[in-house]
Structures are given as C-alpha cells and as structure tokens.
Image (cartoon, rainbow, N blue to C red; front, side):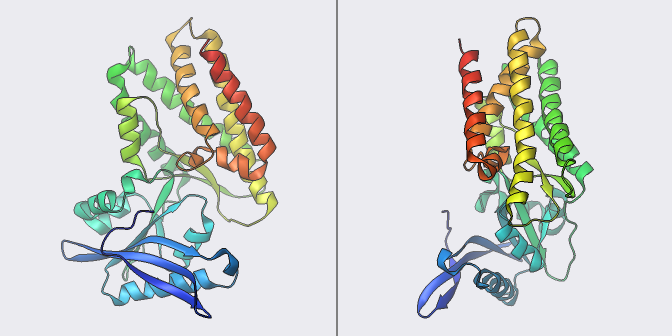
Length: 318
C-alpha cells in the first residue's frame, strides 16, 4: 500500500473495534485544493452493514468542509464495491479531457506523479468538483477510438527496434481492434447493455515497457452498464473475456504456422504471444487483460485456457 505524507484517515468504530477506514490526503496546486482517496477498507466480518457507504459519505463531506475544490480517486475497473460508492457521492468516471479542464495541466501532472496515476494499470480516474457537473466517459465510440489511438501512440516507442514499422503498427492496431470486435459479438449474446471503456491509468508503465522490452497496451474492456453480485453476471463477464482469449489463441497459433511466409504473421505471432502471457496472469496488474474474469467465473476453465496458452507459447520457442 502506498500512503504518502501527510496522511489522514476517517475511521469507523463499532463496539471499540476499528471496522473500516478511508485514508486520504489533501494536495494544493496553484491555489486549488484536491482531496485524494488513498486507500479504503472494511473489515470482512462487517460487510453488508452499510459501513462502507457511511465512510465514503463522511469522507466526501469532510473533504468539502476542509475547503477542497475537487476530490479524486483511482479505482480498479471491476471493483464495483468502491466505484459505485464514489458515483453515489457525486463523483464521475472521467477521461483526460475532463481532468485537464477541471484540474489544469499542473493538477493532472500532480495526480500523475504524486498519486501514482502513471502506475495504475487497469484503473479509472474518478473526480468530483465543487458545484460542477462533469462529463463521464460513457461514449463507447469515443472510448474505442481513444483506446486504439493512445495505444498506437504508445507503441511508437517500440518502433526503433522494428524492421518494418508500418506493417507492425497495422498488425498491432488490427489485433487490438479484432479483440474489441470479438468481445462485442460475445457481449451481444447476453441480454445486458454493454459499453466499452478504456482504463486511463498506467500510461507511464505502458510507455516504459514498450520502449525497453516489448508490447504493453493500456487496458480497455467491455463493461455492463449495471453490475450485480450474481453467478450469472460473473458468467457473462467471463464469457466475453473467454471469447477474446480464444481469439488470441487462434490468432497466435495461425500466425505461428505462417510466420515464415510474411512479416505480418511474424509480428502477429510475437504480439499474440505477449498478450497471451498477460491473459494467463490473472492477478494485479495483469487482471485487467481478462484472465481474472475467466478465473472468477470458472477456475477449471481458466486453468484449461492457461494450459493451452502455455503449451502454445512453449511450442513457439521450439
């Protein structure tokens, strides 16, 4: 856990026992104060008692009382327990345009550096501004466009090591777009309403990995508009992730067979191998690449997919 100085906390106490807390800090840039939620927890023995709801509400009110002009937080994409409470307390899930509009260039840089926004793979930025309504990043078309554009820009850092950069760029963008299309097709098979969203945290990590060693796209996924804590919901999330995983396996396997015939297949097999590794790693910071959704839905199916992926990757090394 990263907790910067100075640190403060609001604590929930039941019968003399600490049952939950929110750690926060207040930063000031160009005379504007921003309250930032560092970390929140509720004792598992006290889940379902409304402690989290009261803590988030109390902390939000407290930060406004402290004279904050805005409040911010980073939350993992599927952590509905946290982000739903932020939305209920006046926060919006925002993209970079809204961040720059309300925080300014220096304010965004402060979030990027002080609050580890550049490290936050698979996380979304939540923002509340006093007496203002913010535009949430809910437009699927714009989010897909941003996802493809930003990842193509970040992969430019890799091109100094690539023999045919334009072919590589085309293959990379095509794989990302293909994965989105396959996920959308599977999502349409359920009765839910879905939207695509790019997670805007972690650009610094993506840039560093792309420059020094390989391929590391910023994450983006299909998300139901309404979340629920049911097995059917986890199945629907898992099936979308499974379809995307199968797409990557087939793409990588076919490209491996034909990689000696054209650079397109060579690049596709190399990129596919890396993205398969990210799928296998179903823990943070790689869980945003889909493996975790399959794991949470069906662990045996996850193990089978991971084994197939490992065998394919091993065969590629022969």
